[in-house]
Image (cartoon, rainbow, N blue to C red; front, side):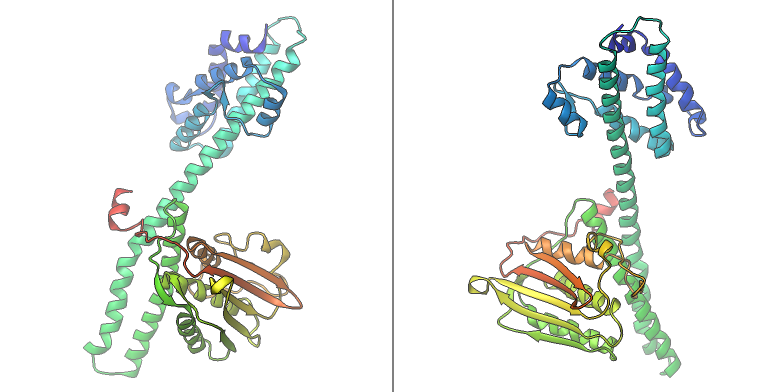
Length: 397
């Protein structure tokens, strides 16, 4: 008997073994029979349809590479996707979900082998098609499971970051009012200054966190472009860093007319994050240089570079330097935490630059130091977009 026919004829015995295996887990013991068998029959029947479908050599190759999700127009992965989400909701871990598919595969092949039917020339072909279908369903289940976990985490972070803003604003306002409500005293003023400083650090972390979750949830980085002078903005940011890092040599070298249609607050984030990163990952005696110039026909592109001397970015970190929650370090120059940094600075900088139609790149070597280069079209064509996670949207979520 062909394997596809055997599965169809023995669907119930196979599902009973599926139930027994799922119930053997700690989580499965708490579920009823209907929940344990969730989508199992649909997965097997979709596998049978796939095995019976005609496949050309090119289609088989595409499927082996994971490029085919349908069988004669029917979705092979829908049942696996829903099964994984259901298992997640029931408390199953990812390893338990993977183990279910392993047990399902073993159950089908074991029962088929023990059925007593004589061997057939098509057996190897059938087993190959069966394994391909199960592997494809498993891959979709894992993808669906991890995607839903990521979405849940990002929603949690978004709501947490949003809800933390109100108490922080209250603390900041109280700290600013306190010196005016009591007799002037050096100690009270010092305490208020410390409170304000720490709240500022926390506020930056929350702001970065919210920006991260907005992009992860598909909302994109909200921008409000308007005509501005990039040179003036950079000078302001440089002055702030010189005040907070009086022992560092921070140079600013603007060249040319640098007005453009950009979001001033978002570009402030870019410049601040790049300068903060340069200071954080370089020795105290190393220079930090911010340069501005124009390029292209009619100066259509503004080029911003931030350079710092010192140890280079480790080769292994270059590929994912702009990824979120990544911090580069090496034995020569270990990781140093900057107040208000949670490893999102370069990710946010890249996202802001890309939302303006620009690019950001980095080069780093032991002989020449590290340089981040931002290219921004003077007229990026970026459209204003409102903040996606405001009060109304968070309540809806």
